[in-house]
Length: 140
Picture 1 (cartoon, rainbow, N blue to C red):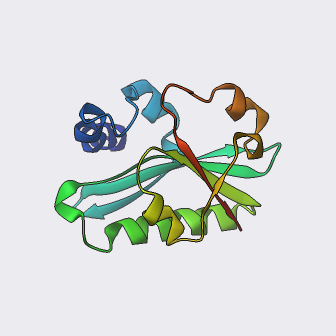
Picture 2 (spheres, rainbow, N blue to C red):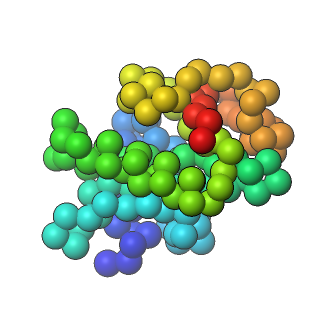
Picture 3 (cartoon, rainbow, N blue to C red):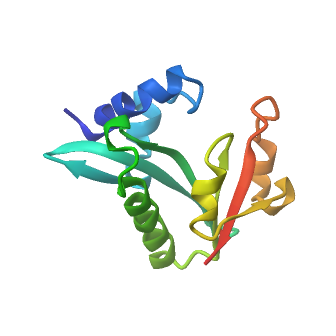
């Protein structure tokens, strides 16, 4: 099974719960290089994308998901550490995530709540006010 298909299947229960935005196979496949994954027995059990805003030198963590069978393990922490390492290796000045859930999780990794104005302009313009997501920002 393709990496993109595995990520879509991993995301699906959370999409159905309204915790994640639905993304098409094409969207995931076309941005597959954004994704950091953790595998267990050749199966993706956790993934997240890191979208680059090159002009602002900022990254956005998106579609962060961990298989429910691996909740309450250190899988989510390992995933976040991989994302931070990737962002650091790209010499980004900061990373951010938009989430309706998981404030405690982001705070554990030195994120803080921020304002819409802290996001790249293109991301400000595409912000979905109906979701009312909190903006979590971390300087690197």
